[in-house]
Length: 456
Image 1: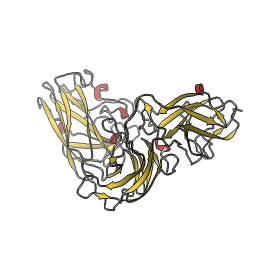
Image 2: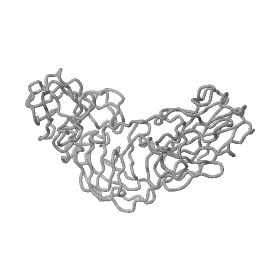
Image 3: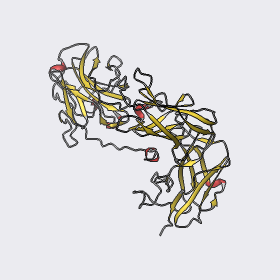
Image 4: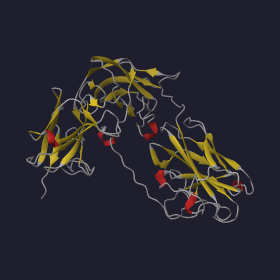
């Protein structure tokens, strides 16, 4: 397993045609995907209810309230819709994991006041009744819970069973229809809101972690550097599944120092974690100035009564330990300018070789201080260039300064990831061409190549 394949991810969403939502007295089964969630196209009920734009009437309000979740423990979601003039009420609610908002999370329960419907992915935009079994899931009102003639506001209670394990933060999206009760889809007022909650328990790992060693997360050579990607190997690092940090784990603009009920301490400080599975943790070294051997611990159920700590290990820390990420231990992790992967398609499916003269982006870690400087776990919003000079060699040719257009942290990624925008020499021959970067008197690992092929 490599970290490189987890660096960049993209998701596409399909938007269904606009149809009528639940209204003042016509259709009581609302069209799905109208909660305002951006992942569903940002659609709301205003497309079907001729009134003001969503949230435009300051006299009204839609709120969601619930506690943080405990995996596998059912809880109540309260959806409250208020307006001083409305006479009939409707809502739609969906629960999504922030790490992948294209999928519903947990299970919503129907009752006399709540209908649960599933997006069947076909033309039926009002979906099909639950259970949804993995399909997108929405809770809505029933006929009785629209409460005709009720003034000022109503509240619905929805029973929701969280997932059985930690999935990071969860967000609820909801839309509400404060209808005027005129029996038509005119003059109604639409409100939207969302609520983000986090895991509030559920750490029950029973195996004591066994730590073996720490290596560079790019070259897999022993040792670590300031703010660099590392991989820890051993056993008992979590459940049998895999846990990757995503948007639902990032708080205050930083990667988590606990993931999947596991933490890592290096030099007495918690390390930001990117990925966990039973025998491997991918993390970032904390921002410490220690040099030489530094203590390492892996902690299960950190900070809880059932906390389990590994024996103390060590890793040799240095200021820099430059390394390039690869796809297979040899082919450098690189992107064309259009974002597609550079590689030999026979070894890296879907990739294409670099062309002489084109600018490609290489990825690495352990290259040292940047300006501005970012702490471990932080996510740079813009360019942060390397402070110290470096040289890039491709196919035996050391690139001119003008052929290295950027060398520094990769924006919008954790501060362990560096990128290098470099021009492939015009003289580069077809085939696997050696590539290396040198800084501070240290060179990236040997044996790394970039596949090159001239246009036919």
